[in-house]
Image (cartoon, rainbow, N blue to C red; front, side, top):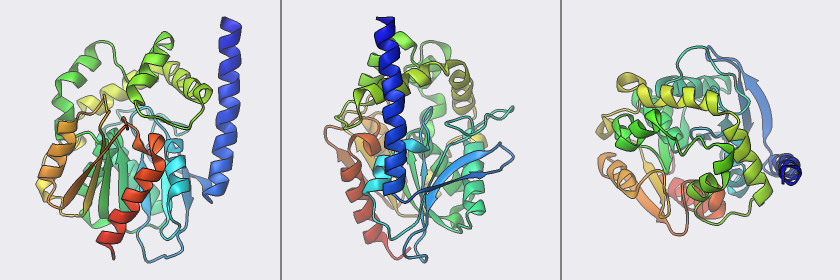
Length: 300
């Protein structure tokens, strides 16, 4: 059994590398490293055909990485630029010695934008990444042309009963190795074309990073106020698309509805048969909704 498990993980790693290389090539993405006070940040980006359009900057969720956006990247049009990167302590970016709060993740996002010469951007955040996008929009509204919040956390995340319980006890976002299948079933309730061996390899890598992830989760959850997801959402007066999977077992439907109600220019779309990661489970559907939203809100 152990030999079969090792073989599956090896096969999953090889499949993942092949997928990353092929999709990166198809999506015309190039890698770079951005130096920041929060450590080196790994970035993938491409220049759009129309330089007058603000690029799309994708901010992944807790425990994720820039590669979670690759399937979406391959489905998007090439008119505007595209930027995705590993948040501090995630993927191949460095883990700082100090606490990495939502605000510091937002600072890292701004650092990537500055390095690439981006004055204004469409911020697209998944889960915790949605909270990062909201924080950047609150602190630097002139830099944000529009928001796309995919299964995003809300302002209540720092005091949410479930988050408090996850800080003190078992955290479904940080599985043990024997909980891999349960974790995948919770996170990805919809269908996905990603091979099972790849999913199990990624989830196993996450499980083996548990010590680091517990520290990052504590930083994320405990850093409220000016360090966390902003409370004053009514002041964020930019076009906003809220996407929420109807099968999401991590962020509930009420959070998406509250975000839509409080953000002055927000519209909400529920995705049937999709869980917590629409960009992985339904990348083409997500790309169509995103493209239509940007066309309706253009020119921005």
